[in-house]
Amino acid sequence: MAEHYLGRWWHEGDDGRIVCDLCPRRCQLKDGQRAFCFVRQNVGGQMVLTTYGRSTGFCVDPIEKKPLNHFYPGSSVLSFGTAGCNLGCRFCQNWDISKAREVEILSAEAPPDAIARTAARLGCKSVAFTYNDPVIFAEYAIDTAKACHEHGVKTVAVTAGYITEEARADFYRHIDAANVDLKAFTQSFYHKLCFADLQPVLDTLRFLRHETDTWFEITTLLIPGQNDSDEELTLLCDWVTANVGDAVPLHFTAFHPDYKMNDIERTPASTLQRARSIAQAAGVKHVYTGNVHDKRGQSTYCAGCGELVIERDWYVLGRYNLTDDGRCRSCNKQLSGRFDGPKGEWGARRLPVRISP
Image (cartoon, rainbow, N blue to C red):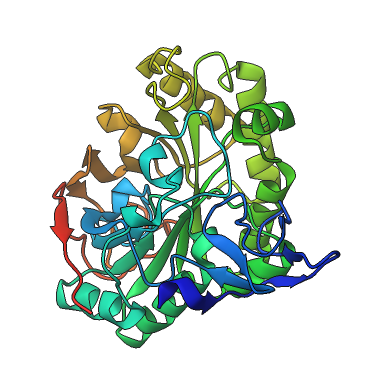
């Protein structure tokens, strides 16, 4: 039973409590008490993951929707999540899942091997842990990743990167690619709007760059008046180039009013284009715009000769000027990322899937 699955990354604390060591919140839980994420619980003095093997649903998506633009372009990915989250973002775009406080939102059980077999049967290049943050269901994600690798399927984590040093290596050892949501570049934003801290996210990004082989890209949702000033964007881009390199793709995406921030207007396309220009001026080689229709801002250009190498119209790939191993056909410069063969042909389709245990 999922509700009795014993979790990892915890220790005994004071007064009969246990302390969660998975995320920087370090929740201290009395018997029966749930952590901030809601899905980790003290049951009889042990940590239990209440959502192991259960999901809010499965869907085959284009990999560019994660967004990952340099990870087997055009391929399909089997996406799923569970419930709960270890951040408290007031602007959450998936709040019906991430803020869920009822385990009943979860569908029937989906064992790791069944997920892997389904992905392989459908021809998916990868499986993505997404919709809510996979850090909080790390045990389930890791077991699923192991099963996927046995079936020749890659794994993707779409995450806010809010994880402790002791759990970080265990988790990313099994992850082939990640999109890390860098929500802003000020501690005040993280504190006031996410109920979290910035530094652990920066630590995760440095860890991914310097201590793993995991391919990763960075996404920042730009919210008008909150994290979109020229000064903050310049600081963010300078940090990226100095700490994780200029070849890591950076995505700026548009906010829409949701959850507890319905009083702010949608992000105009001009803000995304301004952010893209700032990033390019800072030396970031691959900068993308998202949640708006912007073929130029969503296409990929060679960092060597400037030629268009992957044309995108939303999630549909057009012109593709790369060799099978990801080199520009015009100048032979290697594009950063993961490539294996010709472009995928999944397109913009979205295919709901049922998993049979």
